[in-house]
Amino acid sequence: MRPIDLSAATWRKSSYSNQDGGECVEMSYDFVLASWRKSSYSNSDGGECLEVSDDYTGIVPVRDSKTPNGLVLVFPEGGWASFVTAVKNGQLTG
Image 1 (spheres, rainbow, N blue to C red):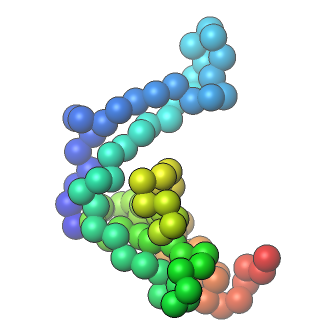
Image 2 (tube, rainbow, N blue to C red):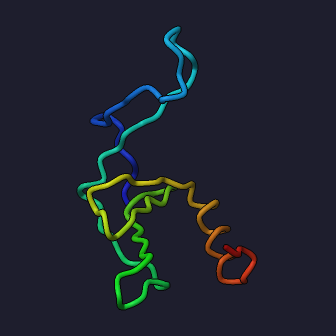
């Protein structure tokens, strides 16, 4: 895994920030170079598929495989591991 290099990151203000310079910030990080893999829970019809990248230390980028150029959600590595474990154990239901 490679460390995250934020020197070329594009930063933008959160939509929750106010005009007075509220303390909310979002970072837009470029994951074009990421290697993506489909979730083992994806079906062969391409429905409800998540892709994750294992390229980064400390974070897990996640995207919708149907919109690969869309938004990427970034989770802390430990939080993602807890989520996956909960799904596998049937602790999360829709």
